[in-house]
Image (cartoon, rainbow, N blue to C red; front, top):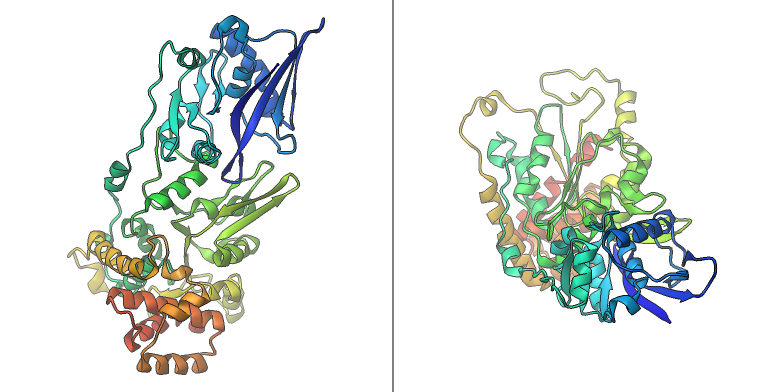
Length: 509
């Protein structure tokens, strides 16, 4: 007789149903053989299973046992197979029939019989639901996260004894219920606020437009001008996550092990700020067992790269493909995975190595060749993919000495949400943003009036714009028009979009 228990593996951020099959046959030399392409962590499961079963007084079948993880051509990684392996080896002659059909199980076991948290619980729950399963049993710490998968009952498991009693009908476990209404009403307080930022009205306007349209933005200026201060306050004005975006974001963070225990869903847009010394693999993701990198962890949020030219060029050039495709592909000997990577890129940099090129009072000590070498660390094709490029100038004394609070993040965010609502009606989707428009949508939604078209034509010729630059300027102009709730892009909107992309001619030509 073969006992079959269903569990799930993770490939990328998606779950894959796995059958754990156990078969016993008489033998004078009892042993347990685990097959089905398991990695080291899965092979070690057998010792944890036997010890946890003894600690929980759960009888296992004896003799020679073969445990197969099917399909055999999918590599099995991690410790989440412990619990289903134990269930497949239970001696039902001694315990009575236990119904495990249409149920899925996953969890790591401790030697005392406790069930420890795992990564990727939400992805597992969604995959189990899509495969037709009605119930899934997961570690108690993962249950809140997995409950966001609508259409499947999620049961929190604290230990083997409790699960065993539930399956026998002796002591039922209460399922965890996710409240969509509570999630949508949840509010998050941000400590950092734009009311702290003095002056820099042009830069703040550029960031406001970038946040509303999901546009990439470059802040360039001398040290101490407030570039990092402006960028770090971005989360306080970003539009709220939709439920769909929250589920996508949570799946990535869960697989990466970056989700806190007991957290149901990520409630705020990610803001990732890696140091410039990080490796290309940390930025893109990967490893022996591929995990999401900073690019994917920024999905539906912001990736902030401070001191942009200091990043290794092999790291910064990795950004080019995901900025276009909104997906990053990781290929290793063990296989290939794809992670979502739709993020808003925010870069900050000095205009030269010393930082004072073009400063009104402090002289730049860099030679022309040194300055050009510094700026060349950022490639032209990458700069071309940044929609908004704005100069952050040093503050005047009047701005520094002013104690009047600047406009609050709440007021800015209100305007952004209004512009986002106007765009959502056009796209019939709250997840879509102007920065994501493909050429067909640009042609449909970026309609210029006569004056706007004339100005765009002059700029295209005089500035020798590329086709990519032309499209990106149109997208920014479309966002500027959204703030005015105007379906037609007017001359002032085009002028603003051109103004917010003029820096590359000054510093990168």
